[in-house]
Each structure stands twice: as C-alpha cells, then as structure tokens.
Length: 213
Image 1: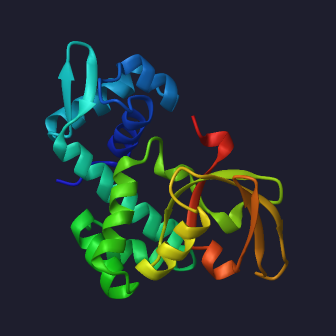
Image 2 (image 1 turned 90 degrees about the vertical axis):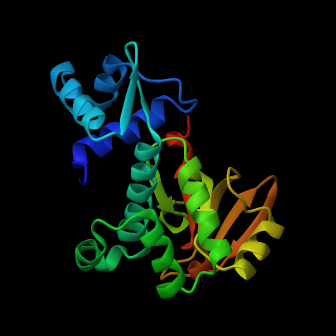
C-alpha cells in the first residue's frame, strides 16, 4: 500500500525535527505542519497502521520501512522536480510508485551514472537533515545568496574534480555573480573563488543557508 502524501509529509517532518531518531511528539509535528492535533493524530495512526512509524510512550519515530519510504520519496522528488523539472508531468506518471532501488537503476541507465555515483546520491538523500523540498540547484541561487551543498548528480570524474575544488557535501558556498543567459557562475567557499560553467553548477544541489538549521 502506497502511503498518502500527507503521511509522507509527517514522515519528512519527523526526520526534520528529530534528526537523532529519539522520537517526536504529536504537538511538535502539528505545530511544524500547521495542522490541528486531531488531523495530525489521524495521519500518525495511518503511519502506525502501515508500519511506517512506531510509538514509544508519547513519541513517534520512523521504522525501517518508514526510512525506506522517505528515501524513495526524496529520490523521486529530486528526480521529478529538480533533475527533470521541465518534463515534470510526464515523469511523475512514468515514475510514480517507484522504490529507491528502481530510482537508483533509473539514474544509472538513463542518466549514465555508475553504481558508485548513484550510491553516493542515495546515501546523501538518506542522511539529509530536513525536508527534501528545501533543495534547489546552485543555479537557482541569486547573487549574494548562500547555500550548503547536499549532493551532486554526476559521474565519478566530475565528482572527483569538484571534490578537489572543495565542493563536497555540507560545504557552504556563496554566489558572487552569475552571467546572463546560462553563463558561468562565480562562487566563493572557504575564502577562495571558483568559476563554474552553468551545466556543472546545475548538477550541484544545495539548501539555502536560511533553511539550514
């Protein structure tokens, strides 16, 4: 049974407010979502019934099945809304219901990412603290905006080149300037400046610093 979008929201919020997996209270979840406590409890009970959540006293935490659900949701969100944003409607229909394993196979076959690169993306999505909806390509940051690198959608060669520049997960970068018409983008990190082509920058996914807790 595929969980509802609202249950997925609950799972995402729990991972956001409970990064150490100790459990989150219904009131904290309701406050974060802006829902009534009644609606929140209904969705929590749905998650319990589907084996996605477990309850310890008054706190709720994700089960292994719930963690897998979150990973599949994040992989599909990144693919549909970021990698293939211009073809969103078609891809949602084609990829709806795919598991994280299916998404990994798709990244390898369609986007020509080897197993190691797709494993890195999957690992970074699983380790993401916060909501996947906060992610955006580096190219979406405006001049003066900063972001924290989450992952890069690229093969081993480009990953290695970017790592040599210092562009690795959790590194904070700031856009110094960007050329019009998809031209190069200059960023600063660790007191150095780097110029990236638009195509490369579009493969780097960040969270805006204002979203980083």
